[in-house]
Amino acid sequence: MTSPIFLSIVIPAYNEEARIAASLEAIYRYMAQQTYPYELIVVDDGSTDLTASIVSEIFQRKGHGILLRNATNRGKGYSVRCGVLQTQGTYVLFSDADLSTPIREVEKFFPYLEQGYDITIGSRGLQESDVQIHQAWYREYMGKTFNRIVRILLLRGFADTQCGFKCFRGEVARKLFVRQQITHFSFDVEILFLAHHHHYRVKEVPIQWFNEPHSRVNALHDSAKMFIDLLKIRYNAWAGKYE
Image (cartoon, rainbow, N blue to C red):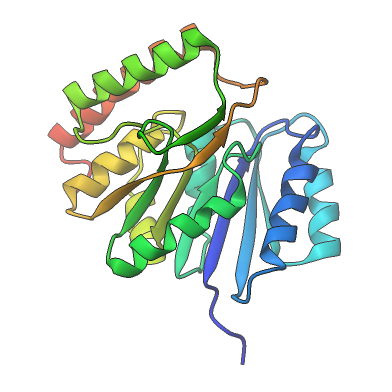
């Protein structure tokens, strides 16, 4: 009889041919040291490079992997949602493809989940956070400004909503992501807003983080879009779309 999956790892990927192999190999090395069953789900978001081929070849050799493919580029939030809704794990982790947060940091989440928290979110904004390589000053400034706006419009109590390293109890993840409306970078805020709306317990955890200089976030264009998304979240809540 097959043991139930303990951890599902979801990774959204768009044109990641230069670094996806190294990231997957790092995950496999870490998971080889663990004793629990796991699954690894990569969602290719309509990549125009060799991302899907590289992932497919690695999964065929290593196992434990599921490759999902969007026909066109739909956005990070859409891709994470697709992956999460395919998971079977007791716990569900989603991580950025560049592993800016090393996969081993998931170990910091499990004690809180076992204590009864429903969601654990990695944070670069706490005093104990270990940011090894910082973003450019203007990106850090814009990130802090975005978090201030989030606290004013939607959510208080979080130092960092945007770190791409979050772990959920599996049934909670699937209940939240099926209600998700935002498909791009602000989906993290929407999921945390949904968690608050449905009275789930969230723990912000300091993690180690390395800036990846080849970020796909356009500082001006995406910041404006993310602000509009915050207004959409507020409207969706008013319209009853999150019930």
